[in-house]
Amino acid sequence: MQWKKLGKIFDPTEHKLCNNCIEFAQSPQTLVFDSFVRIYFSTRERDKTGKYLSHIAFVDFDKKFENILNVSTKTIIPLGELGCFDEHGIFPINVLKDQDKILAYTTGWNRKVSVSADASIGLATSIDNGLTFQKMGKGPVLTSSLHEPFLVGDAFVSVFEKKFHMWYIYGTEWSKFSANEAPDRVYKIAHATSDDGITWQKEGRKIIEDKINKEECQALPSVIEYNKKYHMVFCYRHASGFRKDKEKSYKLGYAYSENLIDWTRDDNHLGINLTENDWDSDMMCYPHIFKVDGKVYLLYNGNEFGRLGFGLAALI
Image 1: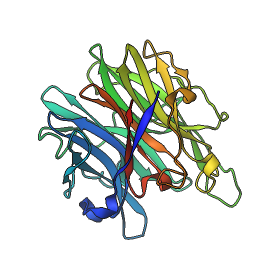
Image 2 (image 1 turned 180 degrees about the horizontal axis):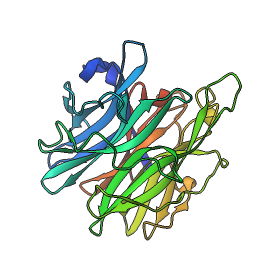
Image 3 (image 1 turned 90 degrees about the vertical axis):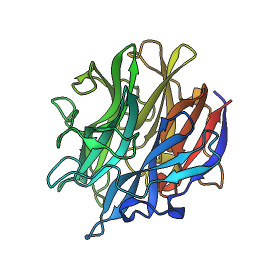
């Protein structure tokens, strides 16, 4: 693949966002309309204790991604009630059109005591073209199970041959890699299918091979069909040391499939790398591959996990 980087196209600090959020525009994901592209992202506010709460916002671009048409300033989807799986944040959100409504698959976060957080996948719907979403219930549609014990999230859902396919992550372990630091998590990419988008059947296995080691963390898969093949872009990192060490931080990974079940990893084929002395010089993370009018694009976050926004690349 060959990509043309178009640079950072959105900085959350330059706009007034919902819920007093002042920075972070993480995990950009698209909803394509006839005349514009809506990009949802996760942003943050600080609660009364100083801890972050993650909220969903969006920005509308023209289809050339040259002009911002609108930025959301009101709550799009509320956080969960006391004790619910999404009480402390939603990050990320994945959206798709389904007949006369829009579906949103949310990753809801809630704080824990022995470890920092847990996550599950929720479902909400919109009947106003994605301006607001209403949850289908207080609980998740996909969550931990016998062999996926925690941290189920990062859902990406698409419909192929009249069946819903979900690629998501699940946690495999929490470990203290350093005696002086809090436990860090390890998570892998998995796959599930559904006939209605609500009840899901997990495939029950890790589908992407590790590149670093068995403790490699894989996150945020997105999939498109292009040139009679399925293409997945995701991000991966070391389980520890990734916050301070550039070499251990997030990079973009790639895999392809011909049947949506068997995936071959080939990161070198993706053909996009860090840029020296720029907004994406230390890391590239939270990618989203998508098509607009037959052209393929890639959204992603850069340094500091998307604190100062996201950028765009076009396949050439």
